Image (tube, rainbow, N blue to C red; front, side, top):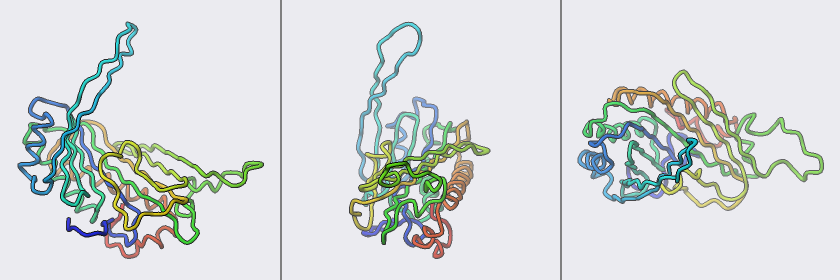
Length: 278
């Protein structure tokens, strides 16, 4: 991606998009140890991700059997490969490969870059994946006296919520989550509104920091977190992964469009879109 001071957010003129992530999981094998997959990615596209760092996490296994036993902790090594602009990164873990960006041209551009990364799976003898995921995060920072609820349809806007006797106003904090089945896989849509400055969900923090054109002042704000995944064994070749991730993106984009109001469409500028935003 071309370096500039303005993050690219898709083809909507004022898209609220701040973070996009794709991931595959696979059964570990000796050839696909994190250091081997890291090297395979570096050999293919290392010039795009010149900064490499190693992290160590702790995994705790708790035995739920009847016989009491102490929890067993194991150390897991992971590698982060980051580009020069610090707006795209690859994370290599035991049995998992992740790509995340905070600067986004469009879904096709993101998908092709992701598939260039997954090509390295073949180099480490990974022929099938067991889970695929695609995730989008949007920050809602209302302007001109608007509120987060003005940008989302029911039930997220709480239009049907009765006023509580004695309360000064409606909820200052609201968290909503729906989990929906699809012919293949599921989608989890979360909407969170509160007061302050929007931030990434906890499980995404520590990867990339969202790049916003200007730091928002504390105020009413919201976060839309769209998480689409497919479980089960699938071939890890480029054509199969492309088909699956294309369908998952279509589902996320359709859900996003169904979730937002005409005001959101007007302010975020989809009329300028040639393709899609989410």
